[in-house]
Amino acid sequence: KILSATLIPIESITQLRQETVNGSTLKVTFNYENTNLTYNVGDNILIFPKNTSDKIDAICKHMQYDPNDIIFYKFKAPEATKKKLNLPLPNNITIQEAFVNYLDLSCQVNKDMLTKIKKFIADEEQYKKICNIIDNKDLLNEFLSKRYNIIDLIAEYNSIYVPFKSLIKILPKMFPRYYTVASSPNNKKNKFDIAITLVNWK
Image 1 (cartoon, rainbow, N blue to C red):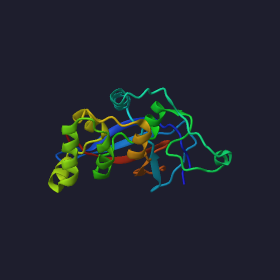
Image 2: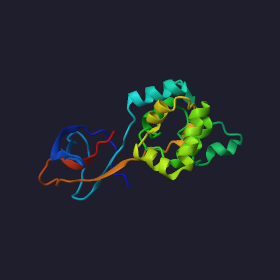
Image 3: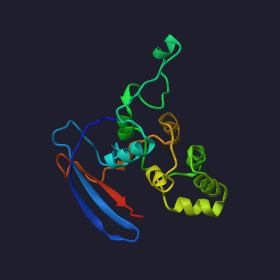
Image 4: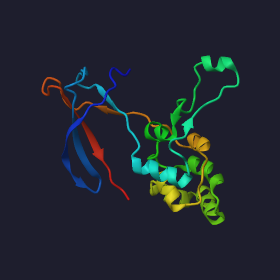
């Protein structure tokens, strides 16, 4: 159950564990002084992520999407508009808004996504290469180890052009990230901490 959803500023970020080959640990302190938020020790905080503008610009430019285009669903039956439908995206939002808040551009491309994307590859050599990756276990494991997201993929395989209505069926939706509060309201007034493991890779 979400008790409060609001914008809360980050007050500070402190490194708790020095960076090693396995990453580092960060303490992120939020200041909720001007909100009605309350919490207890052990509560979960949900962080709602957003895609960055550089990723959105990259995919719109490559796929030739107009970020200002409106996503609009038409219903053939009048009664359908009155039902609670499981739409892939909210109605009457722009492509820009869909990428900012709903479609995960940072997720790792997996075998299932590659299989759905391959039919949108225009270049024959790139198509064959992706098919070989899908069908060969060793090549697939090597590909997965690179942790490509969709932006990385279209940068390397530049003949991929997926219509937007197909892309929303391929990309997963963004979900809130759950973190357990790592501080006590008795010790920190109007503030709370979470601890994050930071992992780096190329």
